[in-house]
Length: 216
Ligand code: SIN
Ligand code: MN
Image 1 (cartoon, protein in one colour):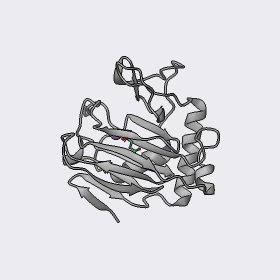
Image 2: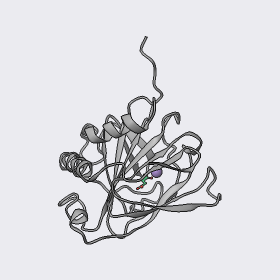
Image 3: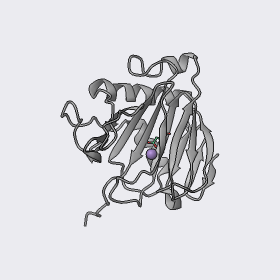
Image 4: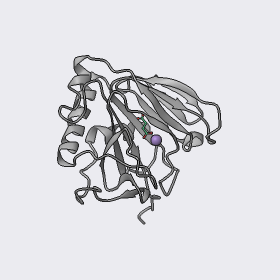
């Protein structure tokens, strides 16, 4: 079952069942143990985000006083990012159509009070491929609008295991997370032990960053 929220913005409720969520969470935990989460900062002001982040794949998204960008190494350790979790790649194969493989998997870690302001995903060099979002942990209120910041917005609650494809006419749609609905349940508590506070949420976004050049 899937729901077209607006053209190109497709919500797949319950895309990952509980077993798949647990497997993905284990893979994400392994990434974050090898490559520790960092706190991104706003360009220019240096104000810290409320969301902590990690990355997997050849490129990772980072933000600091120097701006938003993709880079092949961790901003603090200087190490390359770990490989993208196989469960995330499998989701891309099922939901991203004929897009070339993702190059970046951004891991957003939301404590119970964290949020993410309305923004566009537009740091990629090519917008042909969709962005694929996978949610684990606490439910969250996802707000989405149009291609202009001033366009009207609507909201939908994302549950653990939900996927959202941000593509086509919505590839540059504004979106953000207004709030979490922390649940003291076991799953939320044990989602990423030692990496995420109880009641937290983890969202992965898979992105193609550079254009795909066919090999001839
Ligand atoms: C994002 O826009 O990078 C994350 C969205 C989400 O956490 O669902
Ligand atoms: Mn985004």
